[in-house]
Image (cartoon, rainbow over all chains, first blue to last red; front, side, top):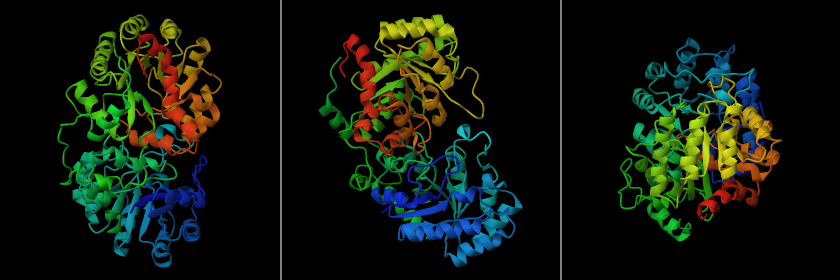
Length: 254
Length: 309
């Protein structure tokens, strides 16, 4: 069983991606043995009508990936009345998880906006997926250079919300293993594996943070789905550790 | 040099290069005891694919010596069924090495080539800012040694004509020229070449096989830059496993000009092989990218040296 916590629907704004239509995406996920995929929307980055984005996402998941795709709503606390978007995600769409992109939406992790969002999510018992980057900053479009989220304030922030499950997404170099260890001790923080690099990255991360805090994520279809799957062939991880990362840890978040 | 022994490789692959070394236990779970569960991961590299890795470094892994580092990397290569690995540059990384430093780093690589002659190949690290000393290093490592090409990093841009004698000599020796290239919207390093620079180099040396390292980082630009130069191939290693990369390279350059490489240990075999295995290309083209192209390009110099593929 594999639960992929990091999938996107809709279109990446700067080029077409293979498998960026829902039918093809679902077919590929099934072909590679993914049993459940938590899906956000690329539209959540730049669109301001996030209610429409989230409604379309739910409809696409239902139509094309029933039983496989789990919709993850986008929330932007810089938008007026963002609280209503959050309410709809939770109460109307029945979502258990929301996804945030602070660098695209223009707020820092220690801002009042972020604190209010984390508090509201914790009050509702939601999981929050914090996406640190979408694309290597060196190769971004020259008119759309978006920095990686600054994670320096994160440890202090997570200490304020001990019941909030916070999933760090697309972490390549923003959070190094030492900081990850501190974050795991400070709060209910998880890390998905799509951007873990260096040979044998999985065993290195298991030594840095508790095994229970690692989740399978692929960042498909922006990344090739096989990249995260092959990390298990490359690593020395044992079967129980593999099962925990691939599904067990995510199951406990549902 | 002995021919590559596939049966021996597979037996090494089963036990690991460092067979006899007890593998560490992670989180209290024995790796060996868990092997059946690991095999349940739904996608794995097929054992019969013949993978050669163009782009490997001794950095990014622990180890006090070059041999210890290479041994670790070979364990990972075994798991991923990578048959042969081309190493260049030693450690620590030096972007602008003076001649004594690039000679020292080449000696590190020579050490591991001697230890694993049937698995490891090497390119000589040279610096375009020292053309005469670099040329001498080509003689030492390639003409008189076992290496098969050169690696140029960010010491000087390859559009500088001072480097021409070195490139000509590589052509005479059938040695491959691997030039690191990047298009960085955040700004290139001083002396860091772009694919446009290697296109200029290709104009001056149309008969020397050149490799555009990283495909320029921004491969959507890099592929376009070198598209019209048939003697330039692209190395796909050392960037995120962004979907669509290999499809565009095969479509625009033809499958014969696309070379798999990883850029380990800073990158992983997993992420870099995924670019090829995740691509929507034919099995025939996949085999070209994974190794057939590189073997074809290396055959003249390997034949000259009496090395069997």
